[in-house]
Amino acid sequence: MRFTRPFSIATLCALMILAGCKEEQAQQADAAFPPPQVAVVTVKAEVLPLTNDLPGRIAATRTAEVRPRVSGIIVERVFEQGSMVQQGDVLYRIDPKPFQVQVDSAEATLRRAQAVQMQARQAADRQEQLRKSNVASAQQYDDAVAQLAQADADVGIADAGLASAQLNLEYANVTAPISGRIGRALITEGALVSASGENMATIQQLDPVYADFTQPATDLMRLRKALEDGALIDDSNAADVKLLLDDGTTYAHDGKLLFSEAAVDASTGQVTLRGEFPNPEGDLLPGMYVRVLIEQGVQKDAILVPQQAVQRDSSGRAQVYVVNDENKTSIRQVTVGRAVDTRWVVTDGLKNGEKIIVEGFQKVQPGGEVAPAEWTPAAEALSGDQPAEAAPAKTDEAAPSPDGDTAGDGSDAAPATEAK
Image (cartoon, rainbow, N blue to C red; front, side, top):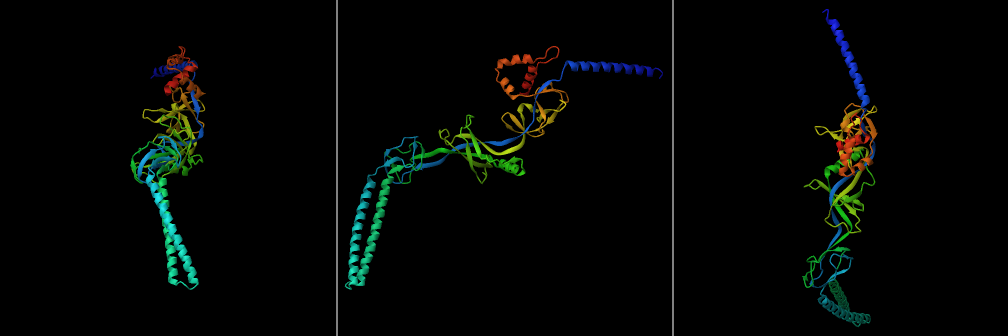
């Protein structure tokens, strides 16, 4: 026990001297290696339109099948297939001769009835004069009045028969019931058609057109609940809709939402909605597949971050690196919602005004100090447009020098590769 205390004191002194040396070396190392530079973005709450991308198909606003109203032989096809026709234009001509004969017969029947009517009227007038002179009996006068009434009825029947014959003669010219683009001819000259029989052609009105699209009923219920809870704002422009064509391009003309079905399809659980779009150039054709972008509300205080700022841990959970006021970093678990262009909507985990790291993840340790610089998306996009062969040169610039110093451009290039 006599030699234990001196030995322990000596050991303690040696350890203190060693610790001081290590601390001095660490300070020298810190001086030689400054905090790594990272690109950060400040989170800002913004008003975000809630736009849904839904599948749909184009339908004509009006569709009419051209059908004959009388029976007969087709003697002429007047229209050009695939052309635009106006309401009332003659499309087919049915042989008019039988109908002209019916008109002539009806006209003769009417003239005969009119002659009988004139004779009955004259007889009734004579009987009326004779009755006033007490020469004719009341029975004779009543018979003359009845014969005049019967002659008037015969004239009415003959007149209706003539109108029917003239109408059939008019129906021998098959006309367009609506204006629009007519399709192919389904009946040729020489064919026998019957009244209200086969379809001869189809006309579709293509300006404007309908876009019928579907949305899950659960999404509609969620939107209504969000509006009731105040998470969404009902915007007056929420009924505006846009179209994405099958090749990914945006249709030049905006449309409007007409209605949504009051029932849910039992087989699919979808609700059908209909929008109307102008089609002056005729680019939209019935049956065409489209994507409908419909704005159904506005989300207030939405938090959006660049997609490359969101990392994933080993379990697949989303996380971001947060930089505090002292430029110290920490890992924050976040909840990611839908994607808007090149950004994620963060529904939970971030607040307005916080800073997160976008580039430079491989040089950051949780709790470590960093040198933040504001991230510029324009520069990032510009660097992304560079050709592939320029990438190795940029990687060489990013390599640290032997004395540990790292070029500013290199520190930006490496995090970009990491984020991707």
